[in-house]
Length: 126
Image 1: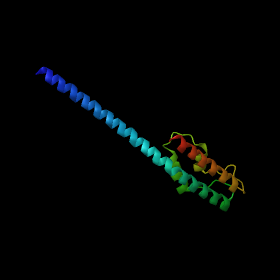
Image 2: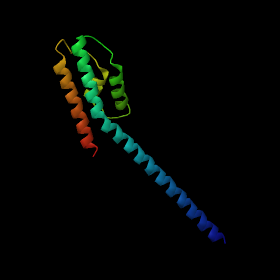
Image 3: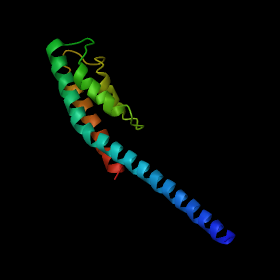
Image 4: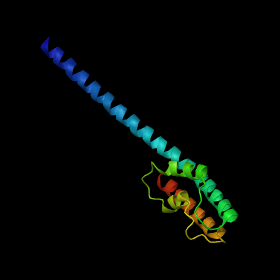
C-alpha cells in the first residue's frame, strides 16, 4: 500500500512538473507573438512619422517642434524592443537638428534608413 502511495506521489509530482513546463512554453510563445506583432507594425509607423516630420519641416522650416501623435505611436512601438534601431529612434525623437530650410532630403533619407533597419530586423527574426 505504501508503494502505491509513493508511486502516486511521484506521478503527481511529474504531472505538476509537466504542467509548469507547458505553462512556461505558453508564456514564451505569447511573448514571441507580441514581439512579432510589434515588429509588423513598425514599417507603417516609421513611414507615418517620417511623413509627418517632413510635412512639419517643410511647413515651418528650422527649429524644434512637437508632432505628438505620430511620434508617440512610434516611440511606444520602439520602447519594449531591445534592438538598437538608431535611425528609428532618431526619427521618433523628431529632432530638427541638422534639418535646414531644405530638409526634405535628409528626412527622406532618415525615413529610408529607419525602414531599412526594420526590414533587416524582420529578416533576422525569421
